Image (cartoon, rainbow, N blue to C red; front, side):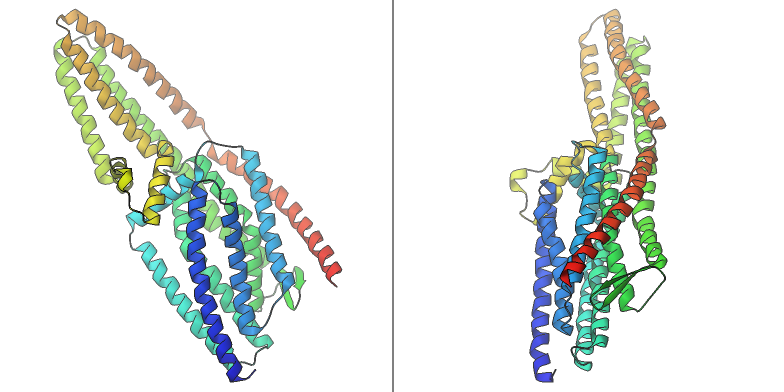
Length: 443
């Protein structure tokens, strides 16, 4: 191809690349918004199509290589992953927990604690995109088009850029969310399942990357046009290692930390009730008022410390005090507020904060009721009546602690792992049969 033809084609590539980035940003926002409202199916389909169009569209513009079979294989793997996810979601049952809102709210904590991390990711991705355009231009103008060498190199760097930049955006927040002690277990398990369902697509991408680097290995070779994808032990090891390090390990860490955190907060609830019962059950009317006032002051101090030491609690308190009619129209702020309001009741930190606030208000009511009584005997009787009520609440907390101590979150993970181990090979063989049947008909 002559230079006069290459230049306008490369300009078209640059325009398409810029359009792809803009479209990706738009679809990402739509996906998040639809996810919060439980209607993310079409946004998910658009995101998958955009990824496929970007990968193969850029390769085609720069090398004139286009494999319909390979595109269909990517789409097939994506649907197989969706089937696996759907089956596992059915197995764990439905829930009233807004898992998308919980995941978004918990994931936003990383950006709040480390404000530099997401801007740095954006800058890094921008530099990678610029480097990709430069490298692609060098390959494009220094090699004959079409040629096997140019196709191999363009495929290599296109896969690295598209897969690498997505990991830079997704992984920090994903790992932080999965390992968070404040994420509810249902949301954590669903996130694990979602990522497990994407393993087949990840394996295909890594196999394509291996082909572009001419990394071969013993195993099953999937011939797709002029491309040979090796399903080798090294590929399985890399995919499994990626899943363990970035998904499974953070899940286990988060599940164990969350259990300890919930027990710790529930123990604190029991401690506060013990302090209240010590006041109410001890028949000393002259000490009721000063001790209740001191306990109330301790609760106020605890609440202030929570707000002061935890940026997410402070943000939540600010949102609670905000006039929603005056909320900024900014996309991120609007969705973050919605995620907080939907997931607040399932967040252990805010459950503990609500407990403190509720107990503080109840102590004020007890104080007022005791102050109305003139006779000491009446104060003692009223104090005993309140004590009986809070003794029952303490017993409920003790039962909660017993259940929490016996809970084994790993069991659900093992079940999911076993189901994955059974279903994935079956669906994998089914996919091979479908593909071979389709390939024979195409010949």
